[in-house]
Length: 171
Image 1 (tube, rainbow, N blue to C red):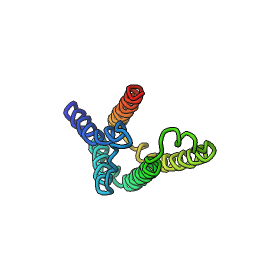
Image 2: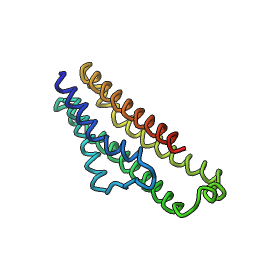
Image 3: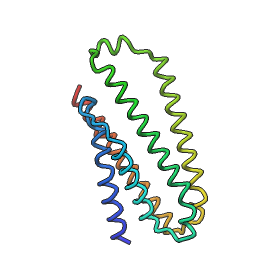
């Protein structure tokens, strides 16, 4: 069990490191991953979850809707990040003063609300897809799933913390 946990943690670190770097890089340095790179990252995440769960054949039958929901969320995330990169690219020629002067807070709030609504809908679809399988998981599988979730959340928190520190250093 310890070897599996270590392998899962290592695989997760390796697969999320490029994304964490992309989140901490400045906009000018942000390299937009290709569709193939996004697909590979999603495939690795899916394989990681499947390896951690060690599903039975009956449980495997419940997996396809989960994988579809995971892929749909990844595509949504990719589209949101591409839109951000596009928006930042359009404003790259503007000075910070021009950016502040030309901002429209109402349009920003509307765009943000749309993005959050889409993320909410995607997350609800994922939760609905997981529910039938989750009910069949053994206590050990649930424990592994919980550990994996905590690891991912900690990794995300660390990436956010790094972004805050870098933002403070840039000021």
